[in-house]
Length: 206
Image (tube, rainbow, N blue to C red):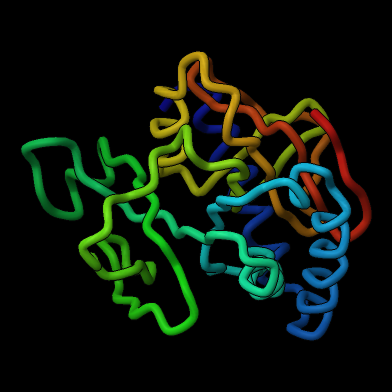
């Protein structure tokens, strides 16, 4: 394991424990405060197509944001893990999988994906291209003011965003508890930075 990978893993273990230790009531209140901050952003007001995630492992839940998006007539999408072309199974997905984004509406049936995270069922509609998303709300384990993001280590968002090329969309927004902010996150060349990070205490433009 490289020095950067080892530092990431140590930090990941500590920060995951911190966010899981938050009391449920504290976590829910923090999520609501973060949602208010997100909805004040111009990118939120103008966005028509938004991708979010379903929270797990103590992540800040974006559920209040999803409900507001539905009320405002915005299209909401969830990430679905896809293995590399020509390969199948959990191991292939972990090693080289990427994300596609499927529509999420009230009542959309979900089922556990390759890693056990609920995902929308195939419904006959094509996945939303990355470049068609206006806003991508991303989970994270840790972040710093420069926009470096520490994820769970699967690399799915980094691989997916790495092919974005010249497209400026989507805006990459990290959602976090205030305790997840760090002075500096170790970074590799392939790590994809955030454009903005929102916590219950502040909005940071990176």
